[in-house]
Length: 156
Image 1 (spheres, rainbow, N blue to C red):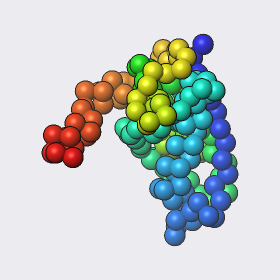
Image 2 (image 1 turned 90 degrees about the vertical axis):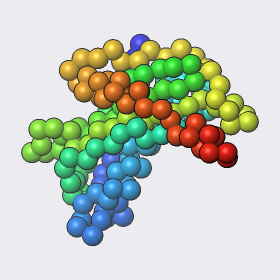
Image 3 (image 1 turned 60 degrees about the vertical axis):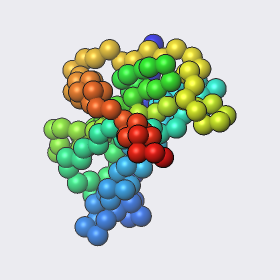
Image 4 (image 1 turned 180 degrees about the vertical axis):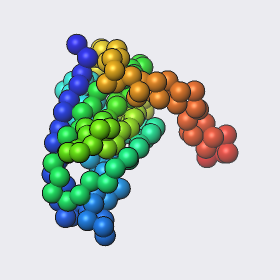
């Protein structure tokens, strides 16, 4: 069974910018917390996931203080030690599109902090109208090489 979760957050004044809407840093925290919970749930209690990269994060609409937001997450891609979790901020009242969406990549690590095999099999979400835009975006972004090789090549 594919792993999908739903979380809710109330946008509080502490999460707001000077316009009284959700601050970008708080938006990233919301997305990261929801995606991390989804990945950990999918990988099981033996998981030791680290955020590897934020592949994509889009914000389409400002969200005012006092709004209760719903964030849906699903595991979209699974490799030996790496998963990509999609996050979707469900449309707020009066909205027709998600207020935000994104892709966050997590790596399973061992005690030394090195990549290790995921502790249990994970079935990614196979598609459907809801997840397909993020699955397509993930496939396009998968062709981009990570920055670690660039740092190693530079002599670090």
